Length: 230
Image (cartoon, rainbow, N blue to C red; front, side, top):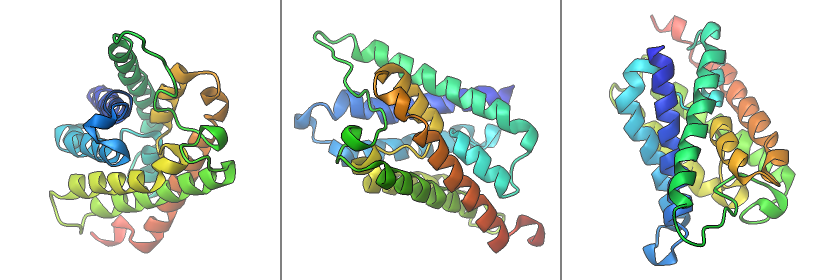
């Protein structure tokens, strides 16, 4: 239960910090944070939570990460469903808090609410195929970074920084394409509020990250299995 509470809180913070920077701050050009600021915000949420709850739950904050760690031999299959439920609920809680804050401004309009999309709902009008390739590739690389940074032979104490900076780079690459998901919980939480077009497109932001994460888990386990490091 402690692990699940930690995942709930951590995923809530990821959504509130990352999506909150997009909904609340990036909406004001005079603040100047833009895509770069949003990318940094997502990275900072992961870095801060890695050191806050990493020792409790492993700080997955993402169903794709949990599945990728399982595929890489780092996570017990019995814990997958409870972790995923906690992450999705945590994301929804974070989005709910963000909605309560954002709707407190006179003239508030929901708009995209930092939801992920493709086609007409991609920031750069990228196609569904481009979005699919982007999300699979970015999640694959994210899991490679996570599995490498947390390996028994990796330098100790720096995993949170590597993973957070990796997520920042991923956002810098893919915000124009999909508004960056690589995280089904993050996508679900915003789609529930954006509704309309976001729910029908949500399938891609579950399928692509899961495919990318599983591929990375199996590939990294082949390259550098933990059992051979003992």
